[in-house]
Structure formats: C-alpha cells, structure tokens
Length: 284
Ligand code: PMP
Image (cartoon, rainbow, N blue to C red; front, side, top):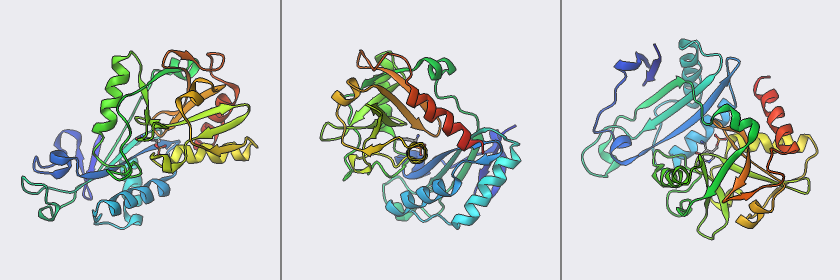
C-alpha cells in the first residue's frame, strides 16, 4: 500500500484526503515538483526543492517548512515506500478557503508527497523515437503565469497535449507568443545541427528544466558545443537530431515533427550518447 505524506504525517493511499474547498482543486492555486528516485537516491533533490520555493515565492505562497525539513521529509517518504526507483510528486496547495479567489482566506497550505511509478512513453519509443506535432495552443505568456512557475494550473499544456493526442501523437511542441519554439507540454526540447546542441533559452518562456540543465552539463563535459538559441519550427524540421528531456520522460528521441522526418528518421548518435550519459549520472 502506497504511503502518502500530508503535512508531516503518512497515510494509506485510500485515507489520504484534502478538502474540496482547497484552492489547489478549486483554482489550481498551488505549485508542484516531479522528481525521480534512481537507485534509492533522489536525483537533484536540492535543485527541485529550490525551484519549488521559487515557484511558491512567485505566487505569494509561504511553504510552512524549511527547505531542509522538506528535503528530509521527501527522503523519509521514499524510504517509507521502499522505493529504489520511482517518481515523486510533491505538491503544495494554497489550502482550503472560501468560494472566492481571495488567497487570504486560505490558512492551511497542504504539503503532499506521493511516491509512485511513472511511465510517460512506451519503452519502444525510447529505441525508435517519438513523433510529435506543433500545437496551436501557445505556451503561457511570461506576463501571465510565467512558465518558470511550476504551478498546479497546467490546463494550457493539457490543451496542447489533447491536440497531440488527437493528431495521433503523444507530445506537442508549444510555441511562445512570438511563434518561436518554447518547449513541449511536459518536456524541454533539444536539436542537434552539424554537431551543435541547440535548445531555446529560458527567456523563450519555458520551464527551467532540471533534466535540461543536466543534459547541458553532460554535453559540455563531452565537448559537444551547446547554444541556447531562439529556434523556429524550421530549425526543428531541418535538424539532424531532436530529443526531449524531462524528469518523467528522461531523454527521449524525436524522429518526426508535423509529418516531416527529422534527420535520418532514427534516433541520432548524439541523442543516444547523451541519453546513456544521463543514466550514468542519475545512477551514480
Ligand atoms: N517543461 C514542462 C512544461 C514541464 O512540465 C516539465 C516537467 N514535467 C519540463 C519541461 C521538464 O522539467 P524537468 O526536467 O525539471 O522535469
């Protein structure tokens, strides 16, 4: 039975509850993180916790625990679930309030930690590559809910995901308000062109992905040049290789976009190399 952490206590999965008045439910008012456990160790725990606190700061949500305590509680919840390899969902809601937006009426933020498994894509797609499309739903403007905030309000990305599914794909590119490539609905995007690794800069309006940063570090360490560049759909269509990164997705090759074959139509050498190096790093 999965043990769920809520505000310092562990509950059996079926006993774990939050109020229907919680503004996390009523308005998507809250923040979250998704992390992975590899060989019993949480990958880049501190980076995830720091991003959570930054998201919370942005939305004026005070997390009633220190970063150290939350890290300890996360590790303890992994241990309580005896997970060597798995996925952690850490959620902080605004708490229960009244039927109105006013967050001042919410006094009890709920800190929830779920430790479970996640499979984003079927295993064969990691070998053969994924087909994606461009969604018509654009990524949030940075003056709306900034994409750097990992908020509970993912509807925009869900709409783009539905577009992907309706087009027979599992993931979609979201453009920003300038029509440039931002990221996918739950993953960051990378291209390889003439041996150079390219990915949109953070100010394209994307989540500052922790897997993205790990892959950039790994590429630099392997002397692969990396450029954080403005990318358009043309760059995707004309790329030699393309792959996506994310905690849940890890590193997954993309071989087709909007019906165009990317490169040879098979996962590329640099993609494979970085995917292997990522697993070495994660399992260290
Ligand atoms: N972009 C979006 C929109 C995401 O939701 C995520 C995480 N699922 C990512 C990128 C990847 O970020 P990370 O590597 O930190 O999981």
